[in-house]
Length: 189
Image: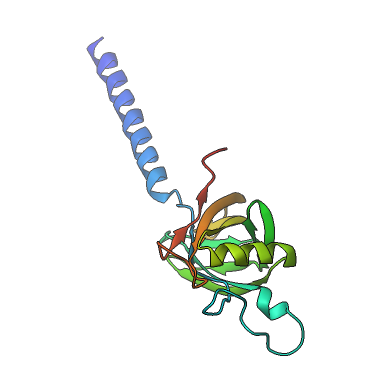
């Protein structure tokens, strides 16, 4: 009887140890989500708070927002394959403009930077410009994308990402206060 009891205990210990090893291996290999940060944002203004002078014909150059987006892959053992990234910019819940960044691959433990422009909606542009002159402007940024991890030659399923951030704009047309705005999941959902 003693032998069967000790054999049962030994088997239970082995199963428990294997379960713990599998859990810690899963924790160590589970990829972390990429981070998205607005590191620069500018709206063209002159010293008196009005639009900059146009170059050439038309007003399209006056209504251009410039953004600097940084995407970091914190995983040392997996690459990330992004689908198209859609960025939407809002002022007072009205769309200022939107931009789609094309799909790309990001290597292990790499950071990618995107500098791009968005043509602003003419109606919202006037309101945004007045708010910048009054030092009360804040632009909301929404980022939507899907991505997959590639680890040990295998691709994961698609993971969805829907992030938001608020960018305060100073009278100079650049980010005021914090210099970097990390995009986060909406806490209201």
